[in-house]
Image 1: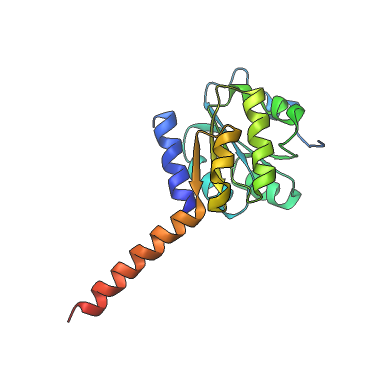
Image 2: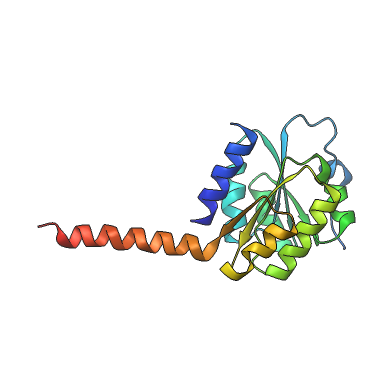
Length: 173
């Protein structure tokens, strides 16, 4: 439910630390594709990666779990084991050339720190963030995200839709 909305945002916007990064992988110069950076490759990040990977984009995935990064690479994405809260990591990835940065990690403190760092390194990059809990959504906006998907609100909307669908089924002879 979060991933389709993030995917729709990508389509609308683009119009259609220690780390292990090879310099050639992170080099965005000469790459004419639009650049998207996904930070966090759990279920939400993976769904975004699968959608973005089908588009003519350069997609960099950053996660601190080597196994998860391997799964991103298996999808044909550029995967990096790194802590995206560090400016040197973001700069190495070419965040200042990225069209969109998507922060999917659930920890609100870490997400806020990453968003602030992206905003410092890349003031023109559009930031979309996952707001795990409603009470932290405004903090993510305040940190510099242009779009925050409120996970609790999205779940409520989906549950209400299922309720309506079930009531129609029950009321139908």
